[in-house]
Length: 251
Image (cartoon, rainbow, N blue to C red; front, side):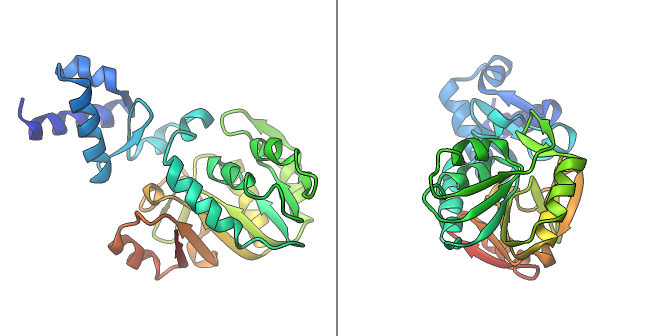
């Protein structure tokens, strides 16, 4: 099988199944493990698939099915780490900040442990990291627990967030498409919308794979975000496109 035909077959398989493993591709196409991993890396760089641990994911997969918390933790790890490390430098002692749900914001929590700040969050994994701190005043919103993402959501969460004002909010999303900021779950989106509306400065943290990507629920307008922090792998043309909506900070 020629390489071009093989790549086409892989894209077809990924788009059909949503997520596919390296072993499944090997069994289907009867080629080596090393060849398939090189093919997936090439397709990922070309924006045809999203490379995940042990396989690949369709670009449009999140619209149909939400990845688990553990699956999201394997995506764009180094890019996310650089984004949150940079984001942490915009947080000053005395700030009252909101941390939204998601694995990117969970990583940010690791850089905040020694800061003298007040944090309000509905991100339970982030709370688990921050509770070891002796300097952070941390408030967990309460609410219904979403096991798939570790987020607290619903009427209790929203009622509590409506009463709090923030100096800064840090949120992530499943994707942005033009001015639309998207997530999979309506309730998670509603909570983030409330917190953002109560914030003086709004930060959106997204790795480059989430740009030009739709998801089920649009919860905010990119025009109303103050800063988008993303990684240095952002495509030049994509960066120029999104600069018409928001100030972009690149790692």
